[in-house]
Length: 241
Image (cartoon, rainbow, N blue to C red; front, side, top):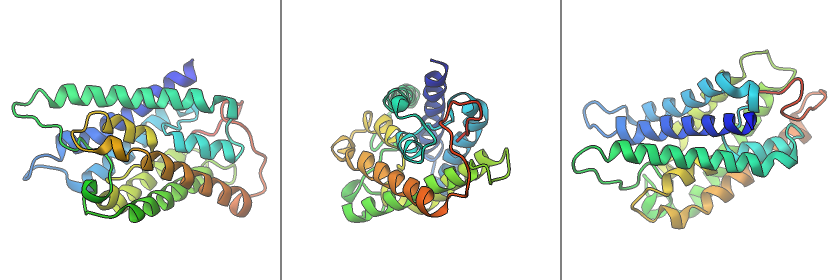
């Protein structure tokens, strides 16, 4: 229960901080933080919660990350579905909290509500194939950074920084294409409150990150992994991600 609670709160913080920066702080033409600010906000959410609760649950905060870690023999398969449930629940509660806050402003319209999309729902009007490809590539790269920075060959204690900066970079690349998912829970938490067709496109933002995570995990396991023993997350020497 402690591990699932940590995943709930970590994912809540990711969605509340990341999507909240887009919904609340980026909405002002003159004072808004822009794409760069939103990208940094997402990175900071993962960095801060990885340090805060990563030692409890491994600090996944993302169903795709949990899948990738399981495929890389860093996480127990029996815990995958409970982690997914906790992560999605945290994202949905964060979305609800943001909706309650944002709707306190007169004239509030949810619009896209920081949701992900392709075609007409893409910030830059990118088609489905572009959205699929960038989400797969970015999630695969994210998993490689996570697995590499938490391996026994990496300097100890710096993994959250590398992972947070990687997520920042991913957002800088892909916000114009899909508004950046790489996280099915994050996509779900926002889509439920959007006034667009985001829910009808949510399938892609589950499928693409899960495929990308699997690819990244397999690249790491087969090609890149140094000669190290592997342990499941939650053991005596858990790898905080």
